[in-house]
Length: 298
Ligand code: SF4
Image 1 (spheres, rainbow, N blue to C red):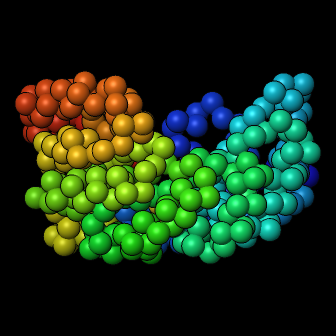
Image 2 (cartoon, helix red, strand yellow):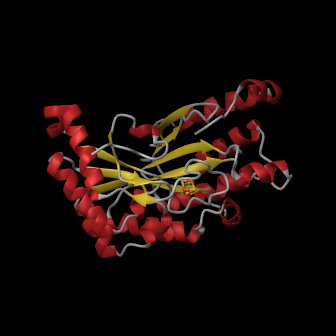
Image 3 (spheres, protein in one colour):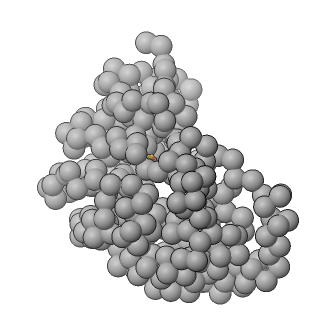
Protein backbone atom coordinates (compact mmCIF):
# COMPACT_ATOMS: atom_id res chain seq x y z
CA UNK A 1 0.00 0.00 0.00
CA UNK A 2 1.31 3.49 -0.91
CA UNK A 3 1.82 5.64 2.18
CA UNK A 4 0.17 9.04 1.98
CA UNK A 5 -0.51 11.62 4.66
CA UNK A 6 -2.58 14.69 3.87
CA UNK A 7 -1.27 17.80 5.65
CA UNK A 8 1.67 18.92 7.76
CA UNK A 9 2.69 16.81 10.72
CA UNK A 10 2.73 18.83 13.95
CA UNK A 11 3.88 17.33 17.20
CA UNK A 12 4.76 18.89 20.57
CA UNK A 13 8.43 19.94 20.58
CA UNK A 14 9.07 17.87 23.70
CA UNK A 15 8.12 14.73 21.73
CA UNK A 16 10.98 15.35 19.29
CA UNK A 17 12.54 11.94 19.95
CA UNK A 18 9.32 9.93 20.14
CA UNK A 19 8.28 7.54 17.39
CA UNK A 20 5.39 9.08 15.42
CA UNK A 21 2.44 7.17 13.99
CA UNK A 22 -0.20 8.86 11.76
CA UNK A 23 -3.71 8.06 12.98
CA UNK A 24 -5.88 11.02 11.95
CA UNK A 25 -5.70 13.80 9.38
CA UNK A 26 -7.02 17.32 9.92
CA UNK A 27 -8.79 18.63 13.01
CA UNK A 28 -12.24 17.52 14.16
CA UNK A 29 -12.99 21.15 15.17
CA UNK A 30 -10.92 23.30 12.79
CA UNK A 31 -12.61 26.53 13.87
CA UNK A 32 -10.24 28.23 16.32
CA UNK A 33 -9.81 31.83 15.19
CA UNK A 34 -6.03 31.83 15.55
CA UNK A 35 -5.29 28.51 13.83
CA UNK A 36 -4.43 27.74 10.21
CA UNK A 37 -2.65 24.44 10.80
CA UNK A 38 -5.24 22.19 9.18
CA UNK A 39 -6.95 24.60 6.84
CA UNK A 40 -8.59 22.82 3.91
CA UNK A 41 -7.89 19.36 5.32
CA UNK A 42 -10.89 17.18 5.99
CA UNK A 43 -10.85 15.38 9.32
CA UNK A 44 -10.65 11.62 9.02
CA UNK A 45 -9.29 8.63 10.82
CA UNK A 46 -6.84 6.56 8.80
CA UNK A 47 -8.14 3.07 8.03
CA UNK A 48 -6.78 0.06 9.92
CA UNK A 49 -5.02 -0.99 6.67
CA UNK A 50 -3.29 2.40 6.40
CA UNK A 51 -2.20 2.37 10.06
CA UNK A 52 -0.91 -1.17 9.62
CA UNK A 53 1.03 -0.09 6.51
CA UNK A 54 2.66 2.75 8.51
CA UNK A 55 3.55 0.29 11.27
CA UNK A 56 5.07 -2.06 8.66
CA UNK A 57 7.13 0.85 7.38
CA UNK A 58 8.26 1.72 10.93
CA UNK A 59 9.29 -1.91 11.47
CA UNK A 60 11.09 -1.98 8.14
CA UNK A 61 13.05 1.23 8.88
CA UNK A 62 13.81 0.49 12.54
CA UNK A 63 14.29 -3.29 12.34
CA UNK A 64 15.19 -5.03 15.59
CA UNK A 65 15.19 -1.76 17.55
CA UNK A 66 11.37 -1.79 17.38
CA UNK A 67 11.43 -4.20 20.29
CA UNK A 68 12.94 -1.46 22.47
CA UNK A 69 10.32 1.20 21.65
CA UNK A 70 8.32 2.05 24.78
CA UNK A 71 6.68 5.30 23.75
CA UNK A 72 4.72 6.31 20.67
CA UNK A 73 3.03 9.56 19.68
CA UNK A 74 -0.15 9.44 17.59
CA UNK A 75 -0.13 12.09 14.87
CA UNK A 76 -3.06 14.40 14.09
CA UNK A 77 -4.65 17.55 15.55
CA UNK A 78 -6.72 15.48 17.95
CA UNK A 79 -6.44 11.69 17.50
CA UNK A 80 -8.31 11.43 20.80
CA UNK A 81 -11.41 12.39 18.75
CA UNK A 82 -11.42 8.79 17.58
CA UNK A 83 -13.91 6.64 19.49
CA UNK A 84 -12.64 4.66 22.46
CA UNK A 85 -13.22 1.36 20.65
CA UNK A 86 -11.29 2.51 17.58
CA UNK A 87 -8.45 3.80 19.77
CA UNK A 88 -8.32 0.41 21.47
CA UNK A 89 -8.03 -1.25 18.04
CA UNK A 90 -5.21 1.13 17.06
CA UNK A 91 -3.32 0.44 20.30
CA UNK A 92 -3.71 -3.32 19.91
CA UNK A 93 -2.38 -3.01 16.37
CA UNK A 94 0.58 -0.98 17.64
CA UNK A 95 1.36 -3.67 20.20
CA UNK A 96 1.47 -6.33 17.46
CA UNK A 97 4.34 -4.43 15.86
CA UNK A 98 5.91 -2.75 18.89
CA UNK A 99 5.29 -5.17 21.76
CA UNK A 100 6.99 -3.08 24.44
CA UNK A 101 5.07 0.15 23.94
CA UNK A 102 3.92 1.36 27.36
CA UNK A 103 2.95 4.99 26.66
CA UNK A 104 0.66 6.14 23.86
CA UNK A 105 0.61 9.93 23.75
CA UNK A 106 -1.31 12.39 21.53
CA UNK A 107 -3.14 15.72 21.31
CA UNK A 108 -6.58 15.59 22.94
CA UNK A 109 -9.18 18.35 22.83
CA UNK A 110 -11.48 18.90 25.79
CA UNK A 111 -14.46 17.75 23.69
CA UNK A 112 -12.63 14.48 22.90
CA UNK A 113 -12.30 13.71 26.63
CA UNK A 114 -15.93 14.73 27.24
CA UNK A 115 -17.15 12.24 24.65
CA UNK A 116 -15.65 9.28 26.57
CA UNK A 117 -17.06 7.64 29.68
CA UNK A 118 -14.99 7.07 32.80
CA UNK A 119 -14.95 3.34 32.03
CA UNK A 120 -13.62 4.02 28.52
CA UNK A 121 -10.93 6.37 29.85
CA UNK A 122 -9.97 3.73 32.40
CA UNK A 123 -9.61 1.07 29.69
CA UNK A 124 -7.53 3.41 27.53
CA UNK A 125 -5.30 4.22 30.49
CA UNK A 126 -4.76 0.52 31.09
CA UNK A 127 -3.75 0.13 27.45
CA UNK A 128 -1.09 2.84 27.88
CA UNK A 129 -2.82 6.10 26.92
CA UNK A 130 -1.03 8.84 28.85
CA UNK A 131 0.53 12.30 28.49
CA UNK A 132 -2.37 13.87 26.59
CA UNK A 133 -1.63 17.34 25.22
CA UNK A 134 -4.62 19.57 25.92
CA UNK A 135 -5.08 23.04 24.36
CA UNK A 136 -6.10 25.05 27.44
CA UNK A 137 -4.96 28.38 25.90
CA UNK A 138 -6.40 30.73 28.58
CA UNK A 139 -8.21 30.76 31.91
CA UNK A 140 -10.55 33.58 30.85
CA UNK A 141 -14.05 32.62 29.67
CA UNK A 142 -14.51 35.49 27.19
CA UNK A 143 -11.10 34.77 25.69
CA UNK A 144 -11.93 31.10 25.04
CA UNK A 145 -15.18 32.24 23.46
CA UNK A 146 -13.41 34.76 21.23
CA UNK A 147 -10.86 32.15 20.22
CA UNK A 148 -13.77 29.86 19.34
CA UNK A 149 -12.16 26.94 21.17
CA UNK A 150 -15.52 25.22 21.49
CA UNK A 151 -15.27 24.70 25.26
CA UNK A 152 -15.58 26.72 28.44
CA UNK A 153 -13.17 27.16 31.35
CA UNK A 154 -15.46 24.95 33.41
CA UNK A 155 -15.24 22.23 30.74
CA UNK A 156 -11.44 22.33 31.04
CA UNK A 157 -11.69 22.07 34.82
CA UNK A 158 -14.12 19.14 34.72
CA UNK A 159 -12.41 17.12 32.01
CA UNK A 160 -8.89 17.53 33.41
CA UNK A 161 -10.25 16.61 36.81
CA UNK A 162 -11.61 13.38 35.27
CA UNK A 163 -8.19 12.64 33.79
CA UNK A 164 -6.57 13.23 37.19
CA UNK A 165 -9.05 10.95 38.96
CA UNK A 166 -8.48 8.21 36.42
CA UNK A 167 -4.70 8.70 36.45
CA UNK A 168 -4.06 9.91 32.90
CA UNK A 169 -1.31 12.55 32.88
CA UNK A 170 -1.97 15.66 30.80
CA UNK A 171 0.09 18.59 29.53
CA UNK A 172 -1.48 22.04 29.21
CA UNK A 173 -0.83 24.17 26.14
CA UNK A 174 -1.18 27.85 26.95
CA UNK A 175 -1.12 30.86 24.67
CA UNK A 176 0.42 34.12 25.92
CA UNK A 177 -1.23 37.26 24.57
CA UNK A 178 -4.56 35.50 23.97
CA UNK A 179 -6.49 38.25 25.78
CA UNK A 180 -4.95 41.07 23.75
CA UNK A 181 -3.53 44.45 24.70
CA UNK A 182 -3.79 45.59 28.33
CA UNK A 183 -5.22 42.28 29.54
CA UNK A 184 -1.98 40.31 29.96
CA UNK A 185 -1.91 40.44 33.77
CA UNK A 186 -5.59 39.49 34.02
CA UNK A 187 -5.04 36.57 31.64
CA UNK A 188 -1.95 35.42 33.55
CA UNK A 189 -3.76 35.38 36.90
CA UNK A 190 -6.84 33.58 35.53
CA UNK A 191 -4.70 31.05 33.65
CA UNK A 192 -2.52 30.37 36.70
CA UNK A 193 -5.65 29.81 38.80
CA UNK A 194 -7.02 27.31 36.27
CA UNK A 195 -3.68 25.52 35.91
CA UNK A 196 -3.33 25.26 39.70
CA UNK A 197 -6.72 23.54 39.73
CA UNK A 198 -6.18 21.12 36.84
CA UNK A 199 -2.59 20.21 37.82
CA UNK A 200 -0.93 19.41 34.49
CA UNK A 201 2.35 17.45 34.41
CA UNK A 202 3.83 20.09 32.11
CA UNK A 203 2.87 23.52 30.85
CA UNK A 204 3.85 24.33 27.28
CA UNK A 205 3.80 27.97 26.30
CA UNK A 206 3.16 29.47 22.93
CA UNK A 207 2.68 33.12 21.97
CA UNK A 208 -0.40 34.25 20.08
CA UNK A 209 0.26 35.32 16.51
CA UNK A 210 -2.17 36.48 13.87
CA UNK A 211 -1.21 34.08 11.09
CA UNK A 212 -2.23 34.71 7.51
CA UNK A 213 -5.62 33.28 6.51
CA UNK A 214 -7.00 33.17 10.03
CA UNK A 215 -10.04 34.88 11.51
CA UNK A 216 -7.68 36.40 14.05
CA UNK A 217 -5.72 38.13 11.27
CA UNK A 218 -9.03 39.60 10.03
CA UNK A 219 -9.86 40.77 13.57
CA UNK A 220 -6.46 42.47 13.85
CA UNK A 221 -6.89 44.09 10.43
CA UNK A 222 -10.38 45.33 11.38
CA UNK A 223 -9.24 46.64 14.76
CA UNK A 224 -11.42 44.15 16.66
CA UNK A 225 -8.40 42.58 18.36
CA UNK A 226 -5.36 44.57 19.41
CA UNK A 227 -2.37 42.32 20.09
CA UNK A 228 -0.28 42.90 23.19
CA UNK A 229 3.26 44.20 22.70
CA UNK A 230 6.26 42.06 23.61
CA UNK A 231 6.88 43.76 26.98
CA UNK A 232 3.33 42.96 28.00
CA UNK A 233 3.67 39.37 26.74
CA UNK A 234 6.81 38.80 28.82
CA UNK A 235 5.23 40.48 31.84
CA UNK A 236 2.21 38.19 31.44
CA UNK A 237 4.53 35.19 31.41
CA UNK A 238 6.31 36.40 34.53
CA UNK A 239 3.03 36.96 36.41
CA UNK A 240 1.86 33.53 35.28
CA UNK A 241 4.96 31.83 36.71
CA UNK A 242 4.73 33.84 39.93
CA UNK A 243 1.14 32.70 40.45
CA UNK A 244 1.63 29.02 39.68
CA UNK A 245 1.46 26.76 42.68
CA UNK A 246 2.57 23.54 40.99
CA UNK A 247 6.00 22.63 42.38
CA UNK A 248 6.36 19.39 40.44
CA UNK A 249 5.25 20.74 37.07
CA UNK A 250 7.66 21.31 34.21
CA UNK A 251 7.33 24.73 32.57
CA UNK A 252 8.44 24.89 28.95
CA UNK A 253 8.47 28.14 26.98
CA UNK A 254 11.10 27.53 24.35
CA UNK A 255 8.97 27.32 21.22
CA UNK A 256 10.22 29.24 18.17
CA UNK A 257 7.25 31.55 18.87
CA UNK A 258 8.53 32.41 22.36
CA UNK A 259 10.96 35.32 22.24
CA UNK A 260 12.77 34.43 25.47
CA UNK A 261 13.30 30.67 25.65
CA UNK A 262 13.04 29.39 29.21
CA UNK A 263 12.29 25.98 30.65
CA UNK A 264 12.52 24.28 33.99
CA UNK A 265 10.93 22.63 36.94
CA UNK A 266 8.75 25.06 38.90
CA UNK A 267 10.22 23.95 42.24
CA UNK A 268 13.87 24.28 41.26
CA UNK A 269 13.98 26.82 38.43
CA UNK A 270 11.13 29.27 39.10
CA UNK A 271 13.39 32.08 40.36
CA UNK A 272 15.91 31.60 37.58
CA UNK A 273 13.14 31.80 34.94
CA UNK A 274 11.65 34.93 36.57
CA UNK A 275 15.07 36.61 36.58
CA UNK A 276 15.59 35.86 32.87
CA UNK A 277 12.16 37.37 32.10
CA UNK A 278 12.86 40.39 34.33
CA UNK A 279 16.07 41.04 32.47
CA UNK A 280 14.34 40.69 29.07
CA UNK A 281 11.52 43.04 30.14
CA UNK A 282 14.01 45.62 31.41
CA UNK A 283 16.00 45.58 28.17
CA UNK A 284 13.11 45.23 25.69
CA UNK A 285 13.23 47.65 22.78
CA UNK A 286 9.85 47.00 21.12
CA UNK A 287 10.68 48.84 17.91
CA UNK A 288 13.85 46.86 17.35
CA UNK A 289 12.15 43.66 18.46
CA UNK A 290 9.33 44.06 15.94
CA UNK A 291 11.85 44.61 13.16
CA UNK A 292 14.00 41.62 14.01
CA UNK A 293 11.78 38.88 15.52
CA UNK A 294 9.33 37.28 13.15
CA UNK A 295 6.73 34.67 14.04
CA UNK A 296 6.00 33.11 10.68
CA UNK A 297 4.55 29.69 11.41
CA UNK A 298 3.92 27.19 14.15
S1 SF4 B 1 -6.01 25.02 17.61
FE1 SF4 B 1 -6.23 22.81 17.70
S2 SF4 B 1 -8.43 22.48 18.00
FE2 SF4 B 1 -8.21 24.58 17.28
S3 SF4 B 1 -8.48 24.45 15.05
FE3 SF4 B 1 -6.27 24.32 15.47
S4 SF4 B 1 -5.82 22.17 15.58
FE4 SF4 B 1 -8.04 22.38 15.78
